[in-house]
Image (cartoon, rainbow, N blue to C red):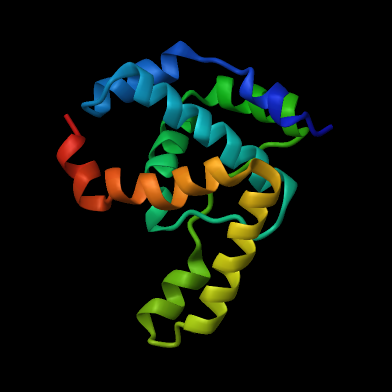
Length: 149
């Protein structure tokens, strides 16, 4: 059972957005946009391999963490839309490689290229630009820290 993107994007949850607004200083419309982008990210992650969070999409990861805290809602959402629970697992391989200096830049570039192609092919240019141009500028690690209440 894999729902369409429009079915996934039809999901609304005021409580998740409201909690995010308590945590971060931003307008409601912006928090709703980030929640919507998180739903897209979950849909894409269910559809294709190789989807990962990097510095560009940290704000999506923050919203995903927030969503997961609503355990019943998150579980029901996943089961109804993807037929399975989507677990959040830190990318261990990247962390280990980074710390032991065996990080392969060419491998990382290939992974990013495949991810960008997947975003573009499945979600379009607007989403690609939102995630990898707009979000990194607005929601860098430093900016996210400043926005926390």
